[in-house]
Amino acid sequence: MAMQQDSQFHGTTILCVRKDEKVALGGDGQVTLGNTVLKHNAKKIRKMYNDTVLAGFAGATADAFTLFEKFEEKIEAYRGNITRSAVELAKEWRTDKILRRLEALLIVADKEHSFIITGTGDVLEPEDGIAAIGSGGPYAHSAAKALVEHSGLEAGKIVSEAMKIASKICIYTNESILVEELNG
Image (cartoon, rainbow, N blue to C red; front, side, top):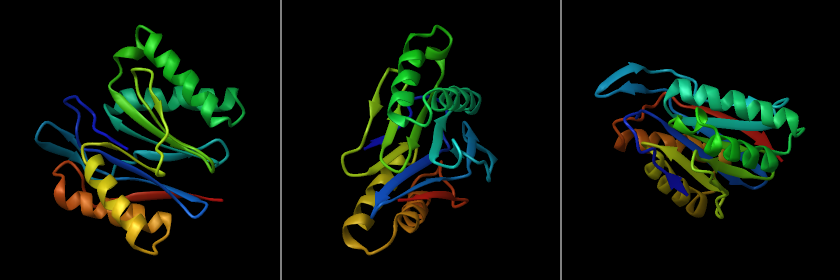
């Protein structure tokens, strides 16, 4: 399930793939403002909660870092329960007067679940184990789907290769790709 950010903020592709008891999350490094590339090596993904949770963002950087902090508070408060943390963040994001103006999306994943969290209150878990957000999300999602179904590659390699394919199609995605993995 690929979700594209509908705003003036482009320059992000985040991809999450689950395969064979492993989960990998990747993000490109490009940051753009309008038609200008401002940075090539931004870090848009990270590990949280004692390296048991992966998180990545697409959208306005300051907004995304605010949401990272809020999600990290939730994951600590609910002792690593990613489902509860995602739902509580989505509720707060949708109802808080300041938070609901934030323009970003999050993908979070642990060993069991992957979720896309939106500011409209959605907590979406992909049925095929593949989730993507950002400008290049649909391209990365399509490439990952094909690689999962037609290759023997592991989750991390699928993320890396699918992101490279997206970078060749989406002008807002580059090949400076960071991939983090959790093993089952």
